[in-house]
Length: 169
Image (cartoon, rainbow, N blue to C red; front, side):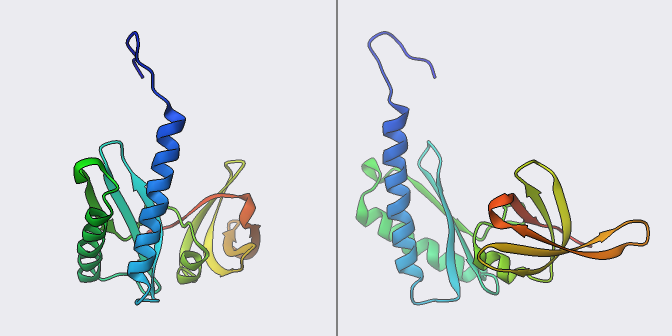
């Protein structure tokens, strides 16, 4: 950040304001999705250019036509709420891609049976099939050794840095 004489910026003030806007958008999106219990908000991000990204997932995925409808609905809500000066914002509503880590228990549940890569807080990695998940523990089935023997591994959620679904061809 470059400051000229007589100027100051307060990153913490921007962060707090941005967090409040994110909370407002998350609440609007949750209200918008309330008639559709199979869909849920995963994440909201705002870039400094006021590009709002809403990630919506569903227990069985989200069809593109639903994402388009959610985008139009939320865009109207954002305009009416006047959260951005002069309504200067853009909006993208999408489902999280495979490159996005799992964030919610509901996402873990919908991916049971799929191959996942779990990165632990110490940066070690475990890879295997997601077998089960509770509010505290993720269980994967790894293949270890030359004979590819199956080994069940339980991992505490609080030890996980991130989990991503692996693409298998």
